[in-house]
Image (spheres, rainbow, N blue to C red):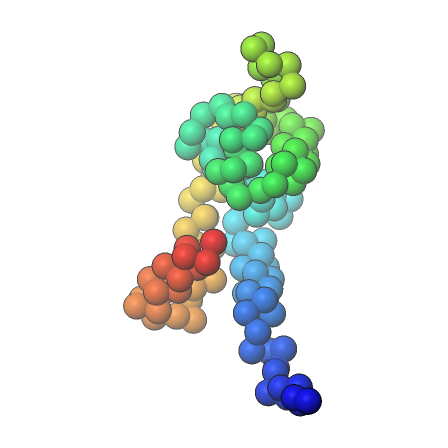
Length: 142
């Protein structure tokens, strides 16, 4: 009978380390982005709508790596704050299309300036070579 490996340390496990890094990134986001009421997932949706124009809920979810339930909740909250408009697709009433409103466009254009500052602050402990490697490796894992 084999003995359990007692070298397992939670603090060395990928899930634990990713969770800690995510918590730090979220805290930095809230401190730096410029609006404490906008979440990282809402910001991602707003940025993609600014970059791409109106998108179906499903397509926007894929572009922002959100499952259907998550993107639906994000869009519902953004619509309630009048940052986006949701419309039914005339060709398929089940499909919803999201588009920025003037209020949403003004918000995301203001916040966008801080987006790079968020990334810079999160990556600050790493030197330039480490940053490039880290981002490349994360891209491969995702």
